[in-house]
Length: 259
Ligand code: PEP
Image 1 (spheres, rainbow, N blue to C red):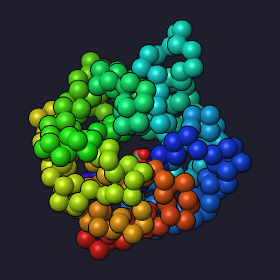
Image 2 (image 1 turned 90 degrees about the vertical axis):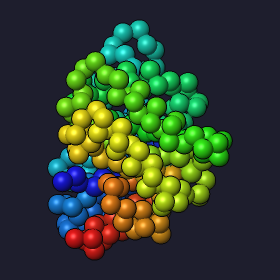
Image 3 (image 1 turned 60 degrees about the vertical axis):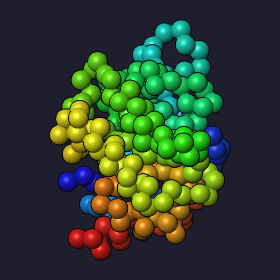
Image 4 (image 1 turned 120 degrees about the vertical axis):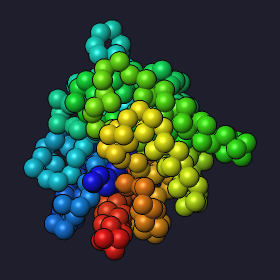
């Protein structure tokens, strides 16, 4: 049985004081009834991982990174490695976000390397896949997504045994207020599961599938009702504690009503 996950990607936002305030609000607002049902994750800019460790240690809220180096160590000025991130108690690593792919030239090969680094450091990778609007309009969405996923799975380090998360994030839905239709999300999730099953039955059973792209409290219930969806990767709305907590609540309620 997979436990749903609501993950927040804080991107390049906030200063130390705001971040610590937000962490405090999330910890205070996390409801006891969610503990056994839904996991919460926050992914701040890497410099705030120590704040996560001191504010969230001992709470049910996990923390993770938005990006890490493809290399383990060495002369890579400005980079932060997966093991450094793990040193601060992080347990997840977002990999291959479309902003990294588009703005920082992160290729499928780099994504695969980063997945391996994350796993080797004991972090659970959250691999982002998704099509652009042009690709969707050309009927190429599922081909693009499956090929991104296959590339991320082309590992050498045996991560097929490790915990794994895939986030389906249509590029045109990120930060735009546009959400993919439930039918489109459903059909992409089915395609992702097929690819995972080809890897192995156990990989498919254990991998969480998230949706990301303009998730907010008002559209969470409909998305979380999808049987194959295991949660959400939330950008903008995760910066507002009240909205992020309400997304958790909607996900929890939709689980409770389906059991
Ligand atoms: C994201 O950047 O991963 C994301 C889903 O952003 P937003 O929720 O703001 O669309």
